[in-house]
Length: 136
Image (cartoon, rainbow, N blue to C red):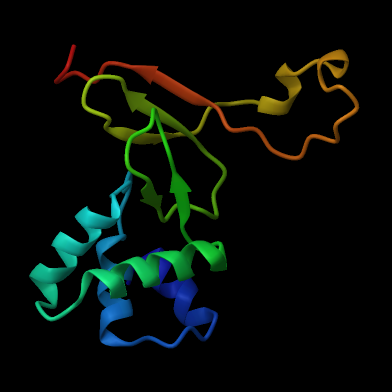
C-alpha cells in the first residue's frame, strides 16, 4: 500500500473506488502529474471515473495537506504526493520533468537577517533548474 493511501486511511478519509484510484495513481517516487495526467491514468484503472471527480479529489487532497500543488514556469499545476517530507524540486527547463531533491542544510540559513525585512520566515521553496539527460 502506498504512503499516501496509508495516510488517507489513517485519517479516516472515506475511501470510495474513485478516491482510491486517484490516490493509487499518485503513488510512487517523483510523481508530479497534471490533473489531466491523473485523469488519463485513473480512466485506465476505472473507466467510469469522470474528470470532475478527479479534479474534486485533487482539490480535497490539497486542502487536507496530503498533496501539494506545484507550479513551475507557467506550466499546468502538478500534484505532488510527497507533501509530508520536506524537499525541493529539480525542474528540466526543456521538457518540464520534475524530480524531488533533498539538499543538505537549512535553506532558511541562506537568507541573512538583514534580508528578512522583519519577516518571521517559516518556509523556503527553492527550485533548481537545468536540462535533464534527454534534453541536454
